[in-house]
Length: 470
Ligand code: PA5
Image (tube, rainbow, N blue to C red; front, side, top):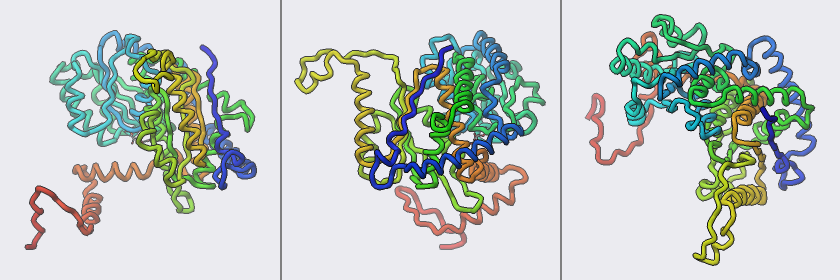
């Protein structure tokens, strides 16, 4: 397996290349690097104590090989794979699958991911599966997420109807080793199951069976994925400060998170599949860093996705002339796959410049043009270029971002591994659906909602009757 290749270019966040104090001065950078240093020490200590598990995942090669063997057996038996899961239990799978691309041709299972309970989406998706030839992988780290539970109940009923007692063979559970409804179900029904280590949070779990099993069954080389992540781990651990891409990036993003805050980070991706990686990053960045700090003050950066070149024609105007509240990360593959040539057309003289050239030249020019224009407008920009579109590079890139996120969170004084806000929403949803034991929470919530002064306009509907009044 080849060595990974990346270019992380921080030129356009340096003070010398940006005016009006938007860039990072040498003194600010040194200060941020000191904080990064402390954060890394603290995270490494927590990792040694077993509190944080994501750094260890790339090295679980034996487990990876066992998963790859099981996945091969699934691929021989079925044609379709339906993943049930949400957030960290689905985004990583989708990101890797799309980023690596062209996986379908390798003879793996046809992969679909159900991560929504919109019935107009979920039921047609389920109906599109030949259930006799479909294996379902239900993933929930906590084993208690309402959406995935609801999907699972529907899918079990559908499987029972389609294949009778064999439903148990066609359902695989991935969850916590001990806790949660999913673990209980797996035990009681004797279902095949895999474990997500308790010290790995949902959005850091792409290299656990939660990501690896469906990806391997769909044809992704998970050995390559882990190898790439392990290479990034080694670069991170063995490279000195300013040459260390993880530490450098952490200092830059920490600066724009809280030292000299830019409330929004935009990822502009140029390259097939990268938009899904951006989606994965949105959860990682948003949920890990958007928190109340120990001192009570809020911190966070809204993660926004923009797709090159499409969104140049919808968002760039705002980025160029709108509020200077954003830091930009441009991401692209160094090498694309297609070499499509534009024909020498005689249509119009203005089109002659395209004739006989690769469309990629135009794509690259758009990338450079957008970076250049935003830089000229004084926007801070980081450029990231990924060597090639394969498992090794994708694995390395995800591991890179997991570390950067953890370090920046630690620097900012938040716990990057929890998500109290998400949990609150989950609890209220379950209470509203009538969960036993949550009655008090439901009453509290309904009372609060009842206190809202209405300013609602309904068109084409009768006004609802007022309670107890005229
Ligand atoms: O990062 C997290 O832990 C969460 O956002 C989860 O990924 C998400 O809520 C789904 O949770 P679970 O995998 O427990 O069903």
